[in-house]
Amino acid sequence: MQVICFLLVLLFCFFTDPPCSADQSQNPVAFVYFTEEYAPYNYTDKGILTGLSVNTLKLMWQEMGVPEQPIKVMPWARAYSKVQTEPEAVLFSVLRTTERESDFKWVGPIAKGRISLFSLKQNDIRIAEYNDLSKYRIGTIRNFPATSLLDKHGFDTVINAHIESGVKMLDSGRIDVLAMDDYAFFSTAKKMGYPADRFKRIWILSKGDLYIIFNPKTPDTLIARFQNALDSVKQKPAYRNMVNHYLD
Image 1 (cartoon, one colour):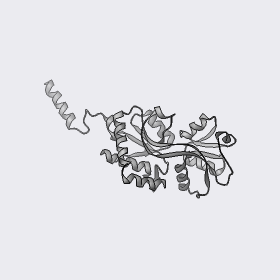
Image 2: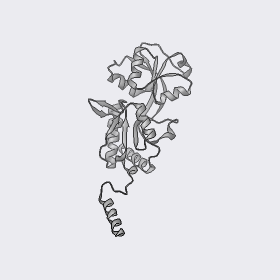
Image 3: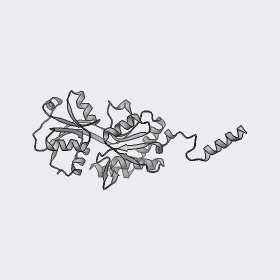
Image 4: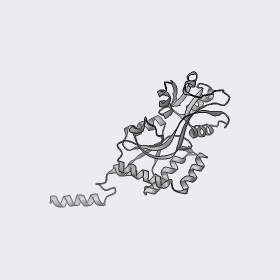
């Protein structure tokens, strides 16, 4: 009788979906995907989430044969905390840095990134080296790499929870310069209604690549699956067309 019961359990596990024996950590559907408003990589346009990173991830799902998954949009600091503490969390788009390297597992790059300093166009601020920053009020975004980069060089910064609040502080003169990604800065300022000649780039802090990050407990086999899908997507005309569209 025990043998019959055991066989029935095995049959039930085999025919149910998902299988009882399946390791859900190996299933892209088991993940919870997070992002933030960070144009042109990920942003909401007329109620629809879009952007270079969003659409690249959708192509990766297609490549893996995975149905399109929900993506939750939330403030950067909360989303960053999620992927640090929750094994099933995935976050994009994230600049890969030495300080972050061992904290996550990485899939990418999705696109090139560059961190610069921005000021009001009317202000005569000239930066040639880090020492030149000592006389200015510097704004950054919480958990963005510019924050740790400037902290490493001994600068106190005004930390904002959101990109929009940083842009507003710069516009109002409460800070002299704002440090963040080039494309994201200009896209956000445009979306907020500022004219193209309101701000200017004054100095490049660093260059890097944008990635999708996973909790460090994510199996390497699954990371490889995502990476292979991305590598395949990047060889296709659709990806190159998206890069030209969003980063032109």
